[in-house]
Amino acid sequence: MNYSMKLLVTFVIPFQILFGWGNTGHRIVGKVAETYLTKNAKVQIKKLMGHHDLSRMSNWADHIKSDPNWKHANDWHWCTIPDGEDYEKGKHKGLAAEKVKEFITVLKKRKSTKEEKQVALKFLIHLIGDLHQPLHVGNGEDRGGNSIQLKWFGEPSNLHSIWDSKLIEYQNLSYSEYADYLMLAEDRGIIRQWQADSLLTYLHESRDLRNQCYKYQKEDLKWEYFYANKSLLEQRLYQGGIRLSGELNRIFK
Ligand SMILES: [Zn+2]
Image (cartoon, rainbow, N blue to C red; front, side):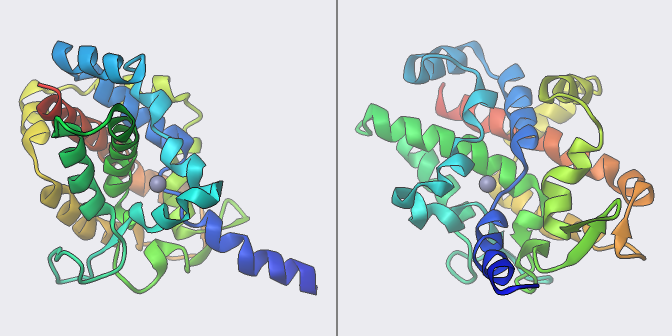
């Protein structure tokens, strides 16, 4: 590796690694959530944003990462709960949980300005999605799998990015096709239950579920890994959407 390549790896990669579910993953979460919004929520979101297409709002929080004015928001997309611990505010790095709570408060507050509410909504849509990606609740040892260099069908990648996007892309479905496909399994009872779940519930689920992401024999992940993890991946995308709808329905009553 020559010097300029090294520079690239040192400075460019750390910024890339911060992304959560890729564009498609966040749009899937947005589409599922929008499907389960109440009429009231749709009307109020449209009043605030001009439309209630949550997929369209779902990636803004990643896109602003290239804006120096938003540099302070880079650690809002993930949190850390080491194995065997429960979430504790401020104990470990990553502010996603605190920010979810904060944005819910902003959206509920009468006194918040329209602009504050717009920012809060876009972040909330994104962060509830991120927190369902099991590796966004990191163990504190490998930057949510970003430090684990692997291959995906022979191409250099890392564990985190395989979960953010490679597994999703492998399906070759558009976000709306994928969302429709996930919603085929609709069970109203389970949906109501998931909608009522709290932030702590899905934080701890991600902590427990992430162990499965680490189960592989070879460094070059292929079909076997996809097959072994497809249902976990889809469960988390689907649950992310349902939990988001529950949160938004409670906010926009
Ligand atoms: Zn993110």
